[in-house]
Image (cartoon, rainbow, N blue to C red):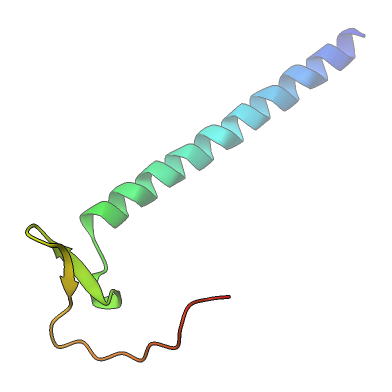
Length: 67
């Protein structure tokens, strides 16, 4: 019984560690994406007046939405 509790504690510690690492990766990824927006891949860019506007001098082929 005592050994089972020790194993559960170890598994819980490992699960918490994995979740903490994944949360850190997510936060760092979001910060990177916020500080380096990829406007060259968007067909519209943010605009303070109207919200979004078409990207100037951009040529792309729209094949429809994903189904």
